[in-house]
Length: 165
Image 1 (cartoon, helix red, strand yellow):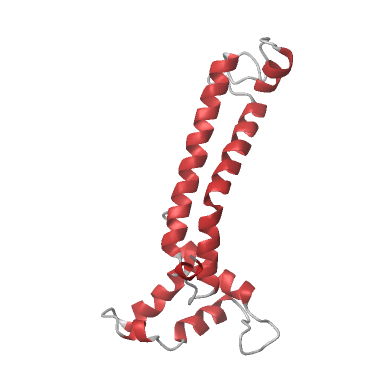
Image 2: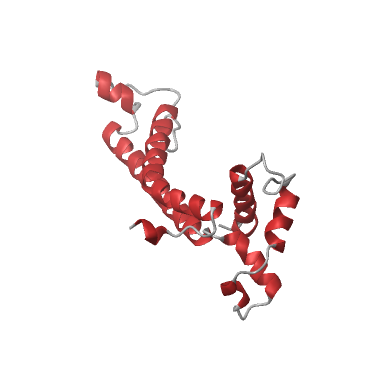
C-alpha cells in the first residue's frame, strides 16, 4: 500500500493507453508522459470546477479514479491469500505431523520422513506450492468483481456502477 501513490496513476495511464483508439491521432498517445499531459490538461468538469481544492490538485486527483475500489480489492486479496495460506499450511502440518508431504500422505498413507523437509517448519516444497496455488486462486475469485469495477472506472471516467443495477 505504500507504493499506491505512484503505482496507481501509472496503472491508470496504462489502462487508458490500452483502451485508446490508436487509429485516431486525436485519441492516441505517443508515450506515458504524453498520456499524462493530455489527461492533466483536459478542461475541468463542472463538478471539478466547483471544488474548493486548488485546480492543480483537482487535476492530479483525476489519476486516482477508481483508486478506492483498488485499495479495498488489494487489502481483501492480501488478507484472503495470507490467511488461507497459513490455515492450509497449519492443516497440512496437523494432518501429516510434519513427516511427509500431503500428496504422499493422501496417496500412500506414508509417514516416512523426507530429507527435503525443513527441520524448523516441517514444510515441504510441494505443500508450499499447493497452498500458495489454492490461496491465490481463492483470493482471485473473490476479488475479481472488484477488479472489474476499478478497471472500468479507470477506462471510462463517466462509468457508474449503479446504472447496471
